[in-house]
Structures are given as structure tokens and as C-alpha cells.
Image 1 (tube, rainbow, N blue to C red):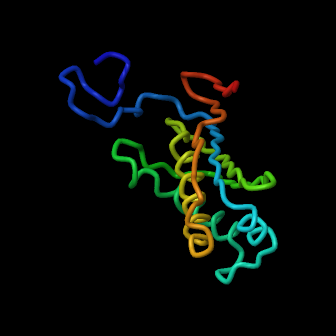
Image 2: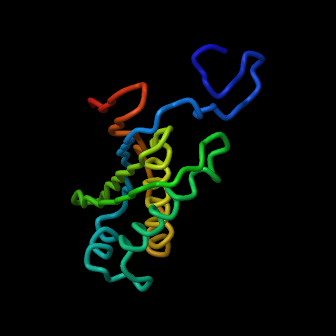
Length: 158
């Protein structure tokens, strides 16, 4: 099964051995979008929902999720993350774009941590707002950029 590093020659799943790799600075950025009614977006930006400041709770959820990625994704290495940042971009009339940046000095990258952070932050926005807008949708979860490691620098060009 060439090309897929999480499988051995017989096709059995495995955690990739990164013990021989030199630690380096690894950075990954990811994003997700949450689409909702304009009224819901307005309530979020005005902090008018009963549950409180939706974006700050989502920020904390994303940070916590990034730190748990190794326990959530079966073959992902548990690593000591150095930094997790989440930002929210309001795109009128109906969208919040969640973006994460994760940094570590390690033997393996943090792409999964960055994508886990935005996924859980987006789910938290949904959870906190579902009482007023069950038709919200989450989409476009994607890696925007990664640097460090053998595979080099990647920047999404779409």
C-alpha cells in the first residue's frame, strides 16, 4: 500500500514511527465555516444569546480540542502543543469563518490539531445557537497552510 504511511506492507494499520526525525518548528493553519441565518449571526455579534459569548466559548473549545487530538484521531501522535490560536471572521450576512493556527517544536506536524480545533469550535457555535437556528451548517473544513518537516511548506491556493 505505497503512499499511505499509516499502513504496513500487509495493509495493517500502524502509527508511523517518527522517532528518527529531527524536531523542527511545525506550524499549521486551518479553517471552517459556519453558515446561519442573518438573525443568528446578529445575535452572536451582539452577544445577545442567553448562553453568553458564543465566540469565546467556541475559542476555548477549539483550544481544548487541539490538545486532545491524539486521543480523538486513532493514529495521530499525542504531542505537547506549544501554541493554539483561534480567530473568527464575521462575513455578513450569514457566515462565521473559524481559523486556527497551531505551533509546536516536534518530530511531527500539527495539521490534525489545527483541523480538530476549527471543527470543534464550529460545532460549539452550532451547539450554543441551535435553540434559535437548527438550520445552521458547518462546511469547508480545510488545511490552509503548513510548514516544517520533510514535506516542506504547503499553502492552499484556492
